[in-house]
Image (cartoon, rainbow, N blue to C red; front, side):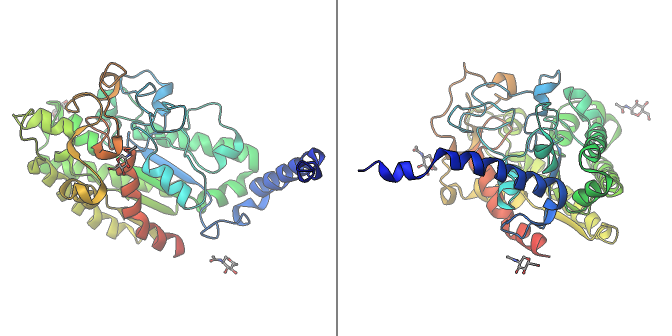
Length: 371
Ligand SMILES: *[C@@H]1O[C@H](CO)[C@@H](O)[C@H](O)[C@H]1NC(C)=O
Ligand SMILES: *[C@@H]1O[C@H](CO)[C@@H](O)[C@H](O)[C@H]1NC(C)=O
Ligand SMILES: *[C@@H]1O[C@H](CO)[C@@H](O)[C@H](O)[C@H]1NC(C)=O
Protein backbone atom coordinates (compact mmCIF):
# COMPACT_ATOMS: atom_id res chain seq x y z
CA UNK A 1 0.00 0.00 0.00
CA UNK A 2 1.27 3.42 -0.94
CA UNK A 3 0.10 5.03 2.26
CA UNK A 4 1.92 2.69 4.62
CA UNK A 5 5.09 4.79 4.63
CA UNK A 6 3.04 7.78 5.72
CA UNK A 7 1.38 5.90 8.52
CA UNK A 8 4.68 4.73 9.87
CA UNK A 9 5.48 8.31 10.84
CA UNK A 10 3.16 8.65 13.80
CA UNK A 11 1.80 12.11 14.56
CA UNK A 12 2.40 11.27 18.21
CA UNK A 13 6.08 11.42 17.49
CA UNK A 14 5.65 15.08 16.61
CA UNK A 15 4.01 15.77 19.95
CA UNK A 16 6.98 14.18 21.64
CA UNK A 17 9.58 15.91 19.54
CA UNK A 18 8.12 19.40 19.51
CA UNK A 19 8.30 20.11 23.25
CA UNK A 20 11.75 18.57 23.30
CA UNK A 21 12.89 20.91 20.53
CA UNK A 22 11.33 23.80 22.38
CA UNK A 23 13.11 22.94 25.60
CA UNK A 24 16.39 22.60 23.77
CA UNK A 25 16.03 25.85 21.90
CA UNK A 26 14.84 27.75 24.96
CA UNK A 27 17.58 26.51 27.25
CA UNK A 28 19.96 27.15 24.41
CA UNK A 29 18.96 30.75 24.11
CA UNK A 30 18.45 31.67 27.71
CA UNK A 31 21.29 29.91 29.48
CA UNK A 32 24.38 29.02 27.58
CA UNK A 33 22.92 29.54 24.12
CA UNK A 34 25.29 32.34 23.28
CA UNK A 35 27.91 29.77 22.38
CA UNK A 36 26.29 26.50 21.41
CA UNK A 37 24.00 26.74 18.38
CA UNK A 38 25.43 25.50 15.10
CA UNK A 39 26.06 28.55 12.96
CA UNK A 40 28.16 29.22 9.88
CA UNK A 41 30.58 31.37 11.84
CA UNK A 42 30.74 29.30 14.98
CA UNK A 43 28.29 31.66 16.54
CA UNK A 44 30.83 34.33 17.28
CA UNK A 45 28.14 37.01 17.05
CA UNK A 46 25.30 36.82 19.54
CA UNK A 47 23.04 39.60 18.29
CA UNK A 48 22.83 42.59 16.01
CA UNK A 49 21.87 46.12 17.10
CA UNK A 50 21.15 48.83 14.59
CA UNK A 51 20.98 52.61 14.81
CA UNK A 52 20.43 55.30 12.23
CA UNK A 53 18.02 56.29 9.47
CA UNK A 54 15.70 54.81 6.83
CA UNK A 55 18.49 52.74 5.30
CA UNK A 56 18.29 50.50 8.38
CA UNK A 57 14.84 51.21 9.90
CA UNK A 58 12.79 48.01 9.76
CA UNK A 59 9.58 49.66 10.98
CA UNK A 60 10.11 51.88 14.04
CA UNK A 61 8.41 54.80 12.33
CA UNK A 62 5.21 52.73 12.10
CA UNK A 63 4.82 53.42 15.80
CA UNK A 64 5.40 57.17 15.92
CA UNK A 65 3.56 60.20 14.56
CA UNK A 66 5.48 61.36 11.52
CA UNK A 67 5.12 61.95 7.81
CA UNK A 68 8.27 59.89 7.30
CA UNK A 69 6.46 56.55 6.99
CA UNK A 70 6.08 53.73 4.53
CA UNK A 71 3.92 51.10 6.20
CA UNK A 72 1.65 50.92 3.19
CA UNK A 73 1.72 49.57 -0.36
CA UNK A 74 3.60 49.58 -2.63
CA UNK A 75 6.39 49.47 0.00
CA UNK A 76 7.20 45.85 0.76
CA UNK A 77 5.88 44.72 -2.62
CA UNK A 78 8.61 42.08 -2.92
CA UNK A 79 9.08 41.43 0.80
CA UNK A 80 7.07 38.20 0.83
CA UNK A 81 4.10 36.51 -0.85
CA UNK A 82 1.72 38.89 0.93
CA UNK A 83 3.68 41.98 -0.19
CA UNK A 84 3.81 43.02 3.46
CA UNK A 85 4.59 46.73 3.97
CA UNK A 86 6.75 46.22 7.04
CA UNK A 87 7.86 49.80 7.38
CA UNK A 88 11.14 49.18 5.58
CA UNK A 89 11.75 52.02 3.12
CA UNK A 90 12.15 49.71 0.14
CA UNK A 91 10.40 46.98 -1.85
CA UNK A 92 11.90 44.09 0.13
CA UNK A 93 14.69 43.46 2.59
CA UNK A 94 17.38 45.81 3.84
CA UNK A 95 21.11 45.18 3.76
CA UNK A 96 20.97 44.60 7.52
CA UNK A 97 18.52 41.73 6.99
CA UNK A 98 20.96 40.11 4.55
CA UNK A 99 23.86 40.59 6.98
CA UNK A 100 21.91 39.20 9.93
CA UNK A 101 20.93 36.18 7.85
CA UNK A 102 24.47 35.69 6.58
CA UNK A 103 26.10 35.68 9.99
CA UNK A 104 23.51 33.17 11.16
CA UNK A 105 21.52 35.26 13.59
CA UNK A 106 18.10 35.50 11.95
CA UNK A 107 16.44 36.30 8.67
CA UNK A 108 15.04 39.71 9.60
CA UNK A 109 16.05 42.33 12.12
CA UNK A 110 12.81 43.58 13.67
CA UNK A 111 11.98 47.09 14.85
CA UNK A 112 12.43 47.66 18.57
CA UNK A 113 9.20 49.68 18.94
CA UNK A 114 7.13 46.68 17.82
CA UNK A 115 5.64 45.72 21.17
CA UNK A 116 4.77 42.21 19.96
CA UNK A 117 8.41 41.10 20.04
CA UNK A 118 9.08 38.27 22.46
CA UNK A 119 12.21 37.82 24.56
CA UNK A 120 13.77 35.39 22.13
CA UNK A 121 13.35 37.84 19.26
CA UNK A 122 14.70 40.71 21.36
CA UNK A 123 17.68 38.71 22.50
CA UNK A 124 19.09 38.22 19.01
CA UNK A 125 18.90 41.89 18.20
CA UNK A 126 16.69 44.71 16.98
CA UNK A 127 16.84 47.93 15.01
CA UNK A 128 16.43 51.23 16.84
CA UNK A 129 16.79 53.20 13.60
CA UNK A 130 14.26 55.73 12.43
CA UNK A 131 13.70 56.83 8.85
CA UNK A 132 14.54 60.52 8.46
CA UNK A 133 16.92 60.63 11.41
CA UNK A 134 20.51 61.88 11.48
CA UNK A 135 23.46 62.69 13.72
CA UNK A 136 22.56 66.39 13.87
CA UNK A 137 19.73 66.71 16.46
CA UNK A 138 18.04 69.25 14.20
CA UNK A 139 17.56 66.65 11.43
CA UNK A 140 15.12 64.34 13.30
CA UNK A 141 13.36 67.49 14.53
CA UNK A 142 12.72 68.64 10.96
CA UNK A 143 11.40 65.18 10.05
CA UNK A 144 9.55 64.50 13.32
CA UNK A 145 11.38 61.21 13.90
CA UNK A 146 13.50 59.50 16.57
CA UNK A 147 16.79 61.30 17.36
CA UNK A 148 20.00 59.27 17.71
CA UNK A 149 20.13 60.18 21.40
CA UNK A 150 16.64 58.71 21.88
CA UNK A 151 17.68 55.56 19.96
CA UNK A 152 20.50 55.18 22.47
CA UNK A 153 18.03 55.72 25.29
CA UNK A 154 15.89 52.90 23.85
CA UNK A 155 18.97 50.69 23.84
CA UNK A 156 19.49 51.38 27.56
CA UNK A 157 15.83 50.52 28.15
CA UNK A 158 16.34 47.35 26.08
CA UNK A 159 19.29 46.30 28.24
CA UNK A 160 17.22 46.67 31.40
CA UNK A 161 14.39 44.59 29.92
CA UNK A 162 16.77 41.83 28.84
CA UNK A 163 18.55 41.85 32.18
CA UNK A 164 15.16 41.23 33.76
CA UNK A 165 14.75 38.14 31.60
CA UNK A 166 18.21 36.57 31.52
CA UNK A 167 20.13 38.37 34.28
CA UNK A 168 22.83 41.03 34.37
CA UNK A 169 25.76 38.74 33.58
CA UNK A 170 24.17 37.11 30.55
CA UNK A 171 23.11 40.51 29.27
CA UNK A 172 26.68 41.79 29.55
CA UNK A 173 27.91 38.72 27.67
CA UNK A 174 25.24 39.18 25.01
CA UNK A 175 26.21 42.84 24.46
CA UNK A 176 29.92 42.08 24.42
CA UNK A 177 29.46 39.51 21.65
CA UNK A 178 26.99 41.56 19.62
CA UNK A 179 27.56 43.51 16.41
CA UNK A 180 26.52 47.16 16.35
CA UNK A 181 25.82 48.94 13.11
CA UNK A 182 25.23 52.66 12.56
CA UNK A 183 23.99 54.09 9.27
CA UNK A 184 23.19 57.80 9.14
CA UNK A 185 24.33 61.14 7.77
CA UNK A 186 22.55 61.37 4.42
CA UNK A 187 19.55 63.23 5.88
CA UNK A 188 21.85 65.63 7.70
CA UNK A 189 23.32 66.73 4.39
CA UNK A 190 20.46 66.32 1.93
CA UNK A 191 17.40 67.23 4.00
CA UNK A 192 18.90 69.48 6.64
CA UNK A 193 21.98 71.23 5.26
CA UNK A 194 21.00 71.55 1.60
CA UNK A 195 17.22 71.28 2.01
CA UNK A 196 16.70 74.01 4.64
CA UNK A 197 18.41 77.32 5.36
CA UNK A 198 19.00 76.73 9.10
CA UNK A 199 22.43 75.13 9.23
CA UNK A 200 23.76 76.91 6.18
CA UNK A 201 23.37 80.22 8.03
CA UNK A 202 25.85 79.08 10.63
CA UNK A 203 28.10 76.47 9.01
CA UNK A 204 30.16 76.31 5.86
CA UNK A 205 29.94 72.82 4.37
CA UNK A 206 33.38 72.03 5.74
CA UNK A 207 32.36 73.16 9.22
CA UNK A 208 29.20 71.10 8.97
CA UNK A 209 31.19 68.00 7.96
CA UNK A 210 33.34 68.44 11.06
CA UNK A 211 30.24 69.00 13.17
CA UNK A 212 28.74 65.70 11.91
CA UNK A 213 32.02 63.92 12.45
CA UNK A 214 32.16 65.06 16.08
CA UNK A 215 28.58 63.87 16.62
CA UNK A 216 29.41 60.48 15.05
CA UNK A 217 32.45 60.21 17.28
CA UNK A 218 30.34 61.03 20.36
CA UNK A 219 27.72 58.46 19.41
CA UNK A 220 30.34 55.73 19.05
CA UNK A 221 31.77 56.69 22.45
CA UNK A 222 28.31 56.30 23.98
CA UNK A 223 27.91 52.84 22.43
CA UNK A 224 31.30 51.78 23.78
CA UNK A 225 30.21 53.02 27.22
CA UNK A 226 27.15 50.79 26.92
CA UNK A 227 29.36 47.77 26.31
CA UNK A 228 29.65 47.60 22.52
CA UNK A 229 32.85 45.94 21.33
CA UNK A 230 32.22 45.38 17.64
CA UNK A 231 30.94 48.44 15.82
CA UNK A 232 30.38 49.00 12.12
CA UNK A 233 29.97 52.55 10.81
CA UNK A 234 28.38 52.90 7.42
CA UNK A 235 29.74 55.75 5.31
CA UNK A 236 27.73 58.01 3.04
CA UNK A 237 26.49 56.99 -0.42
CA UNK A 238 27.11 59.17 -3.50
CA UNK A 239 24.36 61.58 -2.43
CA UNK A 240 24.50 63.41 -5.76
CA UNK A 241 23.01 60.27 -7.36
CA UNK A 242 19.85 60.19 -5.23
CA UNK A 243 16.97 60.79 -7.68
CA UNK A 244 15.50 63.49 -5.40
CA UNK A 245 18.83 65.33 -5.35
CA UNK A 246 19.03 65.23 -9.15
CA UNK A 247 15.44 66.49 -9.37
CA UNK A 248 15.90 69.26 -6.81
CA UNK A 249 19.36 70.57 -7.55
CA UNK A 250 20.20 69.83 -11.19
CA UNK A 251 18.09 72.62 -12.66
CA UNK A 252 16.96 70.26 -15.43
CA UNK A 253 15.15 67.39 -13.73
CA UNK A 254 13.34 65.98 -16.76
CA UNK A 255 16.05 65.46 -19.32
CA UNK A 256 19.60 64.24 -19.29
CA UNK A 257 19.43 63.28 -15.64
CA UNK A 258 22.80 62.50 -14.17
CA UNK A 259 24.53 62.38 -10.81
CA UNK A 260 25.60 65.74 -9.40
CA UNK A 261 29.21 65.34 -8.47
CA UNK A 262 29.31 68.52 -6.38
CA UNK A 263 27.11 66.74 -3.85
CA UNK A 264 28.77 63.34 -4.10
CA UNK A 265 32.14 65.03 -3.56
CA UNK A 266 30.91 66.24 -0.17
CA UNK A 267 30.07 62.64 0.73
CA UNK A 268 33.46 61.37 -0.50
CA UNK A 269 35.24 63.99 1.55
CA UNK A 270 33.20 63.18 4.63
CA UNK A 271 33.86 59.45 4.19
CA UNK A 272 37.60 60.08 4.11
CA UNK A 273 37.41 62.21 7.26
CA UNK A 274 35.33 59.52 8.92
CA UNK A 275 37.81 56.77 8.07
CA UNK A 276 40.71 58.85 9.43
CA UNK A 277 38.77 59.53 12.60
CA UNK A 278 37.85 55.84 13.05
CA UNK A 279 41.51 54.93 12.67
CA UNK A 280 42.36 57.01 15.74
CA UNK A 281 39.42 55.49 17.64
CA UNK A 282 40.70 51.97 17.15
CA UNK A 283 42.83 52.47 20.22
CA UNK A 284 39.66 52.76 22.28
CA UNK A 285 37.69 49.98 20.57
CA UNK A 286 39.63 47.26 18.82
CA UNK A 287 36.88 46.14 16.52
CA UNK A 288 35.58 49.25 14.85
CA UNK A 289 34.93 48.90 11.18
CA UNK A 290 34.19 51.31 8.36
CA UNK A 291 31.60 49.96 5.93
CA UNK A 292 32.01 51.53 2.50
CA UNK A 293 28.79 51.82 0.51
CA UNK A 294 29.99 54.68 -1.70
CA UNK A 295 32.11 52.63 -4.09
CA UNK A 296 29.60 49.80 -4.57
CA UNK A 297 26.68 52.18 -5.26
CA UNK A 298 28.87 54.29 -7.54
CA UNK A 299 29.81 51.12 -9.42
CA UNK A 300 26.15 50.11 -9.77
CA UNK A 301 25.34 53.53 -11.20
CA UNK A 302 28.38 53.61 -13.54
CA UNK A 303 28.09 49.99 -14.70
CA UNK A 304 24.38 49.14 -14.53
CA UNK A 305 24.42 46.20 -16.94
CA UNK A 306 26.89 44.35 -14.72
CA UNK A 307 24.08 44.17 -12.14
CA UNK A 308 21.05 43.82 -14.43
CA UNK A 309 20.00 47.44 -13.85
CA UNK A 310 18.32 49.46 -16.59
CA UNK A 311 17.51 52.70 -14.75
CA UNK A 312 19.93 54.29 -12.31
CA UNK A 313 18.74 57.91 -12.13
CA UNK A 314 15.09 57.60 -11.13
CA UNK A 315 13.11 55.46 -8.70
CA UNK A 316 10.79 52.57 -9.54
CA UNK A 317 7.85 54.28 -7.83
CA UNK A 318 5.83 56.80 -9.84
CA UNK A 319 7.75 59.19 -12.06
CA UNK A 320 10.77 58.19 -10.02
CA UNK A 321 11.77 61.85 -9.73
CA UNK A 322 10.25 62.93 -6.44
CA UNK A 323 7.92 60.25 -5.00
CA UNK A 324 8.91 59.02 -1.54
CA UNK A 325 6.99 58.01 1.60
CA UNK A 326 3.31 59.12 1.35
CA UNK A 327 3.87 60.43 -2.18
CA UNK A 328 4.73 56.89 -3.24
CA UNK A 329 1.43 55.06 -2.89
CA UNK A 330 -1.00 52.87 -4.75
CA UNK A 331 -1.94 55.73 -7.07
CA UNK A 332 1.65 55.80 -8.32
CA UNK A 333 2.57 53.73 -11.34
CA UNK A 334 5.01 51.12 -10.10
CA UNK A 335 7.63 49.65 -12.40
CA UNK A 336 6.98 45.94 -13.01
CA UNK A 337 10.45 44.77 -11.99
CA UNK A 338 12.19 46.73 -9.24
CA UNK A 339 15.36 44.68 -9.72
CA UNK A 340 16.02 46.71 -12.85
CA UNK A 341 16.28 49.88 -10.74
CA UNK A 342 19.00 51.04 -8.37
CA UNK A 343 16.39 53.12 -6.53
CA UNK A 344 12.97 52.08 -5.32
CA UNK A 345 11.68 55.59 -4.64
CA UNK A 346 13.36 58.96 -5.13
CA UNK A 347 15.57 58.42 -2.07
CA UNK A 348 15.86 54.74 -1.17
CA UNK A 349 17.63 51.82 -2.85
CA UNK A 350 15.79 48.74 -4.06
CA UNK A 351 16.21 45.35 -2.39
CA UNK A 352 18.39 44.41 -5.39
CA UNK A 353 20.74 47.30 -4.58
CA UNK A 354 20.78 46.32 -0.91
CA UNK A 355 21.65 42.77 -1.91
CA UNK A 356 24.52 43.98 -4.09
CA UNK A 357 25.69 46.12 -1.18
CA UNK A 358 25.65 43.08 1.06
CA UNK A 359 27.74 41.19 -1.51
CA UNK A 360 30.20 44.10 -1.61
CA UNK A 361 30.45 44.18 2.21
CA UNK A 362 30.82 40.41 2.52
CA UNK A 363 34.64 40.27 2.43
CA UNK A 364 34.74 42.85 5.24
CA UNK A 365 32.17 40.90 7.25
CA UNK A 366 34.17 37.68 6.78
CA UNK A 367 37.35 39.30 8.05
CA UNK A 368 35.64 40.89 11.04
CA UNK A 369 33.86 37.75 12.11
CA UNK A 370 36.80 35.44 11.78
CA UNK A 371 39.13 37.81 13.65
C1 LIG B 1 34.18 26.15 15.99
O1 LIG B 1 34.74 26.11 17.28
C2 LIG B 1 35.16 24.83 17.68
C3 LIG B 1 35.61 24.90 19.13
O2 LIG B 1 36.40 26.03 19.37
C4 LIG B 1 36.26 24.36 16.73
O3 LIG B 1 36.70 23.07 17.09
C5 LIG B 1 35.71 24.34 15.32
O4 LIG B 1 36.73 24.00 14.40
C6 LIG B 1 35.14 25.69 14.93
N1 LIG B 1 34.46 25.62 13.63
C7 LIG B 1 34.63 26.52 12.67
C8 LIG B 1 33.82 26.32 11.44
O5 LIG B 1 35.38 27.48 12.77
C1 LIG C 1 23.00 80.31 14.37
O1 LIG C 1 23.91 80.93 15.24
C2 LIG C 1 23.35 82.00 15.98
C3 LIG C 1 24.46 82.66 16.76
O2 LIG C 1 25.32 81.72 17.34
C4 LIG C 1 22.25 81.44 16.89
O3 LIG C 1 21.67 82.46 17.64
C5 LIG C 1 21.21 80.77 16.02
O4 LIG C 1 20.23 80.17 16.83
C6 LIG C 1 21.83 79.74 15.13
N1 LIG C 1 20.81 79.24 14.24
C7 LIG C 1 20.63 77.96 14.03
C8 LIG C 1 19.52 77.59 13.12
O5 LIG C 1 21.30 77.10 14.56
C1 LIG D 1 13.85 41.35 -13.08
O1 LIG D 1 15.08 41.99 -13.39
C2 LIG D 1 16.21 41.24 -13.02
C3 LIG D 1 17.45 42.11 -13.23
O2 LIG D 1 17.51 42.63 -14.53
C4 LIG D 1 16.26 39.95 -13.79
O3 LIG D 1 17.39 39.19 -13.43
C5 LIG D 1 14.97 39.16 -13.51
O4 LIG D 1 14.94 38.01 -14.31
C6 LIG D 1 13.75 40.02 -13.80
N1 LIG D 1 12.54 39.30 -13.34
C7 LIG D 1 11.51 39.09 -14.14
C8 LIG D 1 10.37 38.35 -13.51
O5 LIG D 1 11.48 39.49 -15.27
